[in-house]
Length: 294
Image 1 (tube, rainbow, N blue to C red):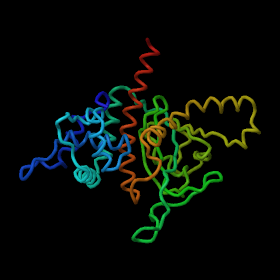
Image 2: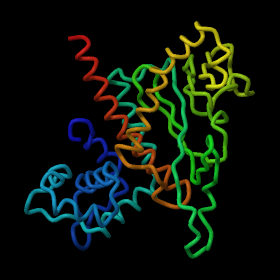
Image 3: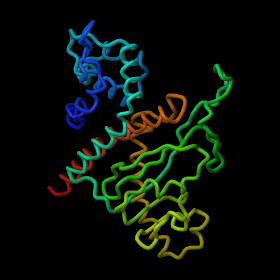
Image 4: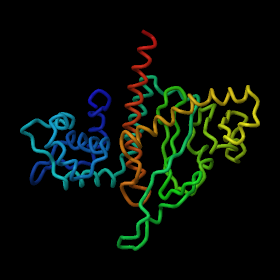
């Protein structure tokens, strides 16, 4: 991660919220705590596991910047640092910082955008103090399957697949309602799957300036001409870029199910994961570009 994560810029961003340790025992270094927090996010670890893993693996110690003789923070220290970030909310600032760096590297073109949403499951158990499931999580049906949780909506750059906007909403809110809130002011094209059919008819839409393209439902494709079917197939390799971003967050980083109650904490974590995913996606895009031009 040292090649893609700007640790020094993160220290400058998070430094004002971190204790300087003028009295009492000296705190762990800020860079170490940031590295451990990112390590926890990428590998989807609990606080106790985040403490134990560096003890068992030399590779993990190198990743977080610990030497063999260095002491690793305990789970309580890791938890307090995480709560510090949740309280002060630098997640959006980190997301904007990473996005700004990717823009300087020429990886955000601000012309076309691809939008999609995905369910993040939550537990519907009532075995808690309130005897109720999380009030901010709802049930929704997709196809023949019911889901309980929330929805994550992202919009990615059409050319590179880098996430430029991320938000969360209730699971029972329709996807198409969030399109115009997520797109960038200078976008000239919006692409989505069949869940976004009719987005150009909404009051907030701007069909005179923007081109709205949504994939047809499978039942509608039978009525299309061969040319239209061929055009639909051409959309698939473009729309799949938003799926790659979800793959990073839900499969590679393991965030298929919420970690906390309420939307706010989960939104903060997803925003941080989207920031890290962007650095990986940008790095992969640059490598492919070098191969193509070689």
